[in-house]
Image 1 (cartoon, rainbow, N blue to C red):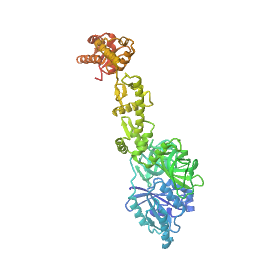
Image 2: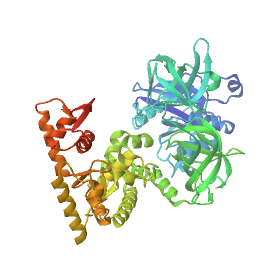
Image 3: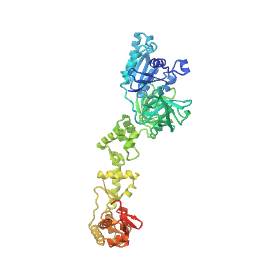
Image 4: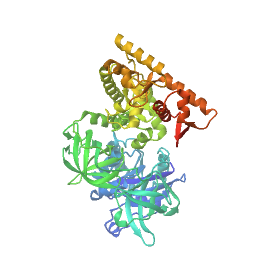
Length: 627
C-alpha cells in the first residue's frame, strides 16, 4: 500500500511519543504543557520512510484516560496500529480501552510493541509477553506480531521498521476515485494564507482548485493549497495526512467534528439507526433513554439511547439501537462510532451506522428490524432489494440506488441483473420495482379494472386517464407500470384503453343485432353519417353498444358525429394521395374529394390533425409529421 497512516495506542507513559521520535526523528509533543507534564494531551503528527521506500504518516494519540476523546479523533483513517506495552508494567487499563476502541472502529492491522526493554530483565519480559498473548487471545489482535524495542538505545527499531514494512503489504489500497471525504481534526489561521485544516483523507483525492463543502455547516469552499508531510503538492490521495488551505471560510466557522467532502455526499442528521456491540466486562448495560456520548469521525455529540427489539442492551451483547442526537452531524451509512457513558466517561461499546436518515419508529417494528438485519450483513443484492422495497417511490433508478448505497454503478447493475433473474425485482423504463410492490400494484390495478369491466361489460376497457386518477403515482411511473403489466400479460393495452389481459367484450343476441346495425349504417353513410342521436334513437342498448365500439370499429369525431374506422382510413388515403402532387389541402378540396359537406369534412380533418396525418397552417393543411 502506497499511503499508510500508522497510529500509536497504549497506556500513558508506555513510550508512544519516544517511539515515534525514534522512528521519524520528529518530536510530536509540541505544546509547552505536554513537555512540562511529560504526557501527550493533543494529537501529534509525524512521518517516516520504510526500507521499501514507502512513506508512513504517524498519529501519536494521548494515552491518559482524561484525553481518550483526543485519541478517538486520532483513530480516524488509521490503517495500522502500534499498540505499545511497557516491558515493566504489562497490560494496563488504557491498553485495554484503546484496543477495544480500535477493534470497534474496524481497525484490523496491529503490531504489539513491547517498549523500554532495556529497563526489564529477560525473565520479566517473558512474563509480560505471556501477559500480552493472553490479552489478545480471542480478540481481533490475536496473531499480531510482537516486537521488543527500546526507543532510547534504538534496540529493535530496525526490526520494527521491517515488520511494519511487511505488514503494510497486507493493507488494502484505499480508493482514490469517487467522492472526497476528510474528517477535520484541527483548524487554524495562518497569516497571509487564511484558514488551514488538517485531517486524514479517507476517500477520494483532493486537488488544488477543487470546490468542496464543509459539513454540517453547508459552507462551500475551494482548495487554495495542499501540503502532505510539510511539502506542497497539487493533489492529495486517500490514506494521506493532509493540511489544506481553504478559501471563503473563517477559522471560527470550522473545526474538529466538521468534514470536508464532495458537495451532496454526506447526510446531515439528528438521528441514527445502528448496530451496537457492547464491550465485555464493562459492568454497564444500556437502557431506554440513557444519555451517552457518541464519537464518529472527529465528532463528539451527546445522544439518547433507544434500544430496538428489546428494552436493554447488556454488556458484551450486540443489538440494534436508535441514537437520538442532541446536535446535528454529517455522516454516511456504515460509518463506525464509539459509545461512552455520560459521566464518568467510560468506553462501553461501539458499532456501525446502518441508516443515517431514519424516522422515529416503533421499537418493535418487525419491518424495521428485518431491514437493519439485512443492512448489517452488507450483502450487495440484499441491500439493493431491501432499498427498493422500502423506498417511498415505487420505481427506483439504478443511479439512485448506487448513490444511496454508495456503490459503483457497475456493482449495482451486476446485482440488479441477478435480482431480475431471480424475479426479486422487475425493471421498467422508469426504474426497478420490488416483486412485493409489483404484486401489490398489480393486484390493485387489476381489481380496479375488473370492477370497471363488471359495471361496463360492453366497454373494451378503462381509459388511461381514468385509471391513473385512482392511484397516487406520477404519470411516468404509472405508464411504465402499466406497460410492464402488459408485457407480463396481466393487462392489455389497446390505444387509450386498458383492460384485463384475457378480457373481451361479449354481446348477447340483442346487442349483437345493434352492433351489426350501427356498423352497417355507418359504412353505408360513409362521409355523411347520421348524428349519434339519430343513430341510437335514444335506445339504451344502442348507446351501450356504440360506446363499446369506440376506439375499435368506430371513431368519435365530436359530441355529435361518429364514423366507421374504414371510412376514416379511406379519407386518410385520399388525403395522402392528394399530397403526392400537392403541397396544400383546402377544406373545400377535401369536401369535394369525399363528397361530404363542411359539417362532416371539418371534424374529419381536425381528427386527422390530432392524429398527425395533416397539419393546419392558416386556412389550409399540409402533410403531417406522423405519416
